Image 1 (cartoon, rainbow, N blue to C red):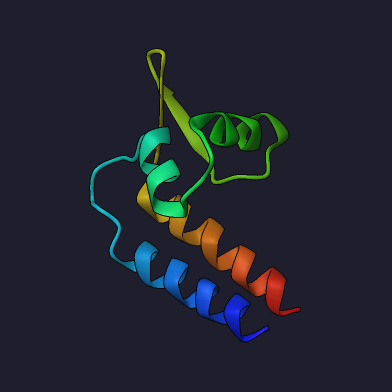
Image 2 (cartoon, rainbow, N blue to C red; image 1 turned 120 degrees about the vertical axis):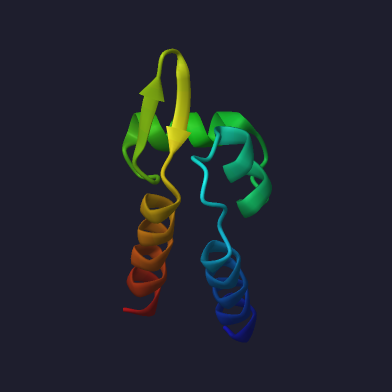
Amino acid sequence: MADRHRASAEVAAATRALPTRFLTPDDLVEMFELPSVETVYQWRRKRTGPRGFRVGRHLRFDPDDVRAWVESRIKGAAA
């Protein structure tokens, strides 16, 4: 249980320091230590991940949306 809270705190700290530019799927893979970029695309298909948008054929994420998504996940885990 303590490890879960520590991991949540580390993710929350990382999202507070998000860059001001729009994030790529690769950025999310690196930030959350995901197995592959396919995980990000699965989240998008299932509508379980942070809200993203397309710029031409490129997928981007607003850092504020990613932060809000992480906070909602933390609150959901605390319930």
